[in-house]
Length: 193
Image (tube, rainbow, N blue to C red; front, side):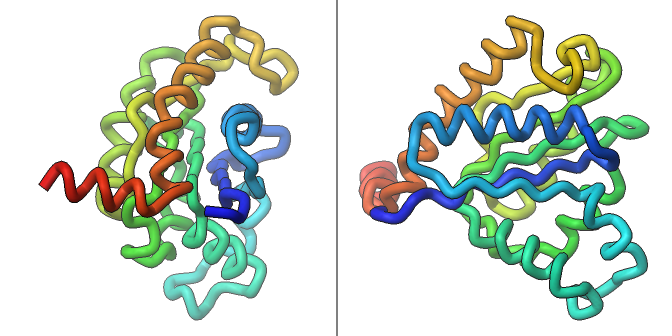
């Protein structure tokens, strides 16, 4: 692949500033440090008024349609959401309800979430992985969960969390490499068959 990777993050945070957006930006920067990328962050809180009331994709304004198209064309996707009542936000789900069900097939997706305490950490495996499995995306091996204590002024400050984000990206690199070179993916699939 000669062009830069299309690296897209979707933050389900409803306000600005947002810990979810801060975590997404941190992960974007780590990945962009490894590969030439075109980065784009979708902040759902900013789109909320334009998403409200839409039942069909044809009802969405052009600004939301552009963001959906950018997500659907991503080479790598990072998703972050705050935990709200034990799951991702309704707005997060509503946005992904408009994504074409075949658009993310084999797209590497790094899963991340933020919450008030550690008790919601299983959102990665119990909520986010099933959602992106529906899309047949390649959910990456290590997700990232952060609590309020891990941030100072909406910046990651906890050394253990910063190390986990680094490790999550490190473990994602082979999958990102596959996204960069589709011939490598074809060769690996042929050997596996």
